[in-house]
Structures are given as structure tokens and as C-alpha cells.
Length: 444
Picture 1 (cartoon, rainbow, N blue to C red):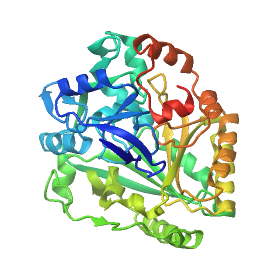
Picture 2 (picture 1 turned 90 degrees about the vertical axis):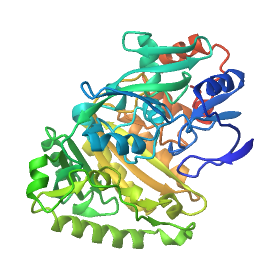
Picture 3 (picture 1 turned 180 degrees about the horizontal axis):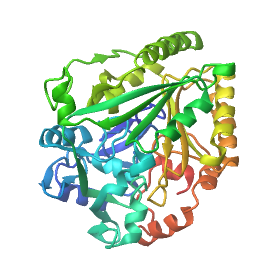
């Protein structure tokens, strides 16, 4: 079946032959017969990473929980299982993934392939750091079990490898014990970027920390932020508060964006007004800690269905960079100055502290990451290329799971283990059958 698909950003829109297996054996057979393919989970990579050069193998139907050990916290699941589906089963039992990204609608296989990071990367690493092993089918080997001791080179290449080492069939990962489904959140206010970075540094011992940043604030208030620091709430905290359920049920009623908004809906004026209201509302909550359900704390945008339509029918791109810690304040200030002057409003602006990545193509490095969304408009890509130059000069890089347009030279400058990755990929895929639009664009 030939269809046109895109990533979550709805750019680019690409024609591909869609393969939809329903059982692992069927998936292996389809992958073995395909000519130039990539596996795809729920399509939440923003750009062209999960779109095959010719065929795209949609693994979403492979979504079974295979085994769970309540003593050790290890769970084995098929790669097409959504994190939200895993959470809905395991949270009432007192377990939660160690690492979740900003949406629960990603598959476990996609989380592994992107080595997703959350609000706790500074202290607990990325998704791959909590994976024990996985079953991987490569063109050279067929299905094999891979871990840090079994085929360790494939483990390092697959974690963050954007699906380019083969088809992940199942994953065994460790879950965290939690007493409740609540987060104790403390909000801090930063009047500028320097204060925001100091606040994130001061919260280094906290489990979770993230900053919402007003990327349109100017002058002395450039980079003003709200910093949200969180810890898993205890059963006693929930019992002593107004909350009655230790594990609150997921929200059923969600707002939806029913159609593509017109291009004029998002502009510097509307976004300045939104940012001002959001900043003031957050500032009022900074006085005392609050108990917040896990869902809105970790996945705030999941409460708005089809929010990617906000940017209009041409779609949007997310520009997520990481800057080494010693240059972060200077470079981030320059980026924000350019964004403010250019006026292309970002609906989402997130600042986090990261540690080192664990895979050969993992995005994180010790420093700070800034994620911004931009509607696709004339002149945007030239503007982003300008930002890229600042990032590359500082030794930073862009996140492959969010990328739809970076240049090959930008990519090669940022990923120092690329030669090693290419060598490993060649050893298990000599004829280059595993190919995505992203890998062809960047020459991976």
C-alpha cells in the first residue's frame, strides 16, 4: 500500500510503501523482503527519521507485554507498545518508566531508537541507560538478543541509532518503583536566562527539572523562565493532601484542534500575550509546592489532541540543540536574541540540563538543550541554518528525532562517533537496505 506520510511536524510529506505486520514473524519476513526500509512506531519523530526510503514497516501492532518481574522491576514488551499503554498497566502496580519524553504516545522501540531523554537526564540518563536488552533482527544475523555483554557494539549503535541497525522486536527495561501517581512540584521564577541556568544548576540534585522559557522576552528579561522541579510524591503526602486516589485515572476529556489554524493565528503578538499570561500564572504558583498528577507534569501537550495543527497546513519543525555547559549561557543568549529579532513565534520553548549520552548517535552531551517549534514559512530554513552555525561553532548538535532539515555538514560536525557507527552498520547491513529519508539526507 503506497501512502503519503510525515512525522509529527507534518513536514516533509513523503510517499512510501507502507508495510503493516501483526506478528513478530510477519515483521521479520516483511523486513527480509524489503529493499530500502525503516521501522516506524507511532510516527512521533518530528521529521523524516521514521519514513523509509522506499518501504516503511509500521510496527505499532506489535504491542504486547511479554513478561514482568515485580521483584526486580524488569518488564519485557514488544517494540510497538506505547509508553502510555505501559504506564496504564504498570502505574497502578506501583511502577513507572525511569525515563519518559514529553509525550506518552511514543513506542518503546521508538524511545530506544531515539534514546529519548526526559526531565531527569542530568541525574539518571536517557532511555537506553535503563534498557537491559532487546531482540534485534538485522539483515546479516536475523533475530538476536543484544545487551551490554551480548553484541555490545550493536547495543551502542542501536541506542539512539534511529532504527538504522535493524528491526527491534522486543525490549526488556527496568521500571522505577513509585508509591503514587503524583509529582510534588515546586515552581521557581527566573527573570532572565542567567537566572534560569543558575536555577537549573541549583536543582541538580532533584530528580526532575525543566524550564519553560519565554523566547520572545527582550532586553533585561531575555530568557525569563519558569523552572519546574519535581519529585515522586509519597503515599503519606497524597493521604495528607486533598487528593484521594494514590493513582489518579488518566484524563478522558481532552481538548482538540479540529482543523489547521490559519498562518496568521501564531504571530509575535499572539504569542507575547500567551507567554505573558503563562508567566504570570506560573509565578503565582511559585510560593508553595503543589501535588500534580503524573500525566500533566510529564505530558502537558498530550492534553490537547492534534496540537500539531496549530502551526497550519504547511507543518512545523522543531529545532532542538544541545550546547556544552561551558558555552551554554553565551550561545543560548545569542540564539534567543536572534529568535526575538526574527519574530517567528515558538509555541513551545523548553530548556533542560543534560548529561552524557549512552549511544553512538545519542543526542545528549553535558550541557543545556533548548527546544523550539517554528511554523514552516518562507525564509525559515535560512534562519535556522544561521542558528546552526552558532551551535556548531560551540561544539553543539541537533537532535535527530526532531530533525527535518539540518545539513549533512552540520550533522557530521556534531556527532563524533559517526565513523564507528557507519562501520557497525556496514557489518550488519552491507548492501544498505535499512534506509530512511533522514539517513539518506545526512549520509548516515
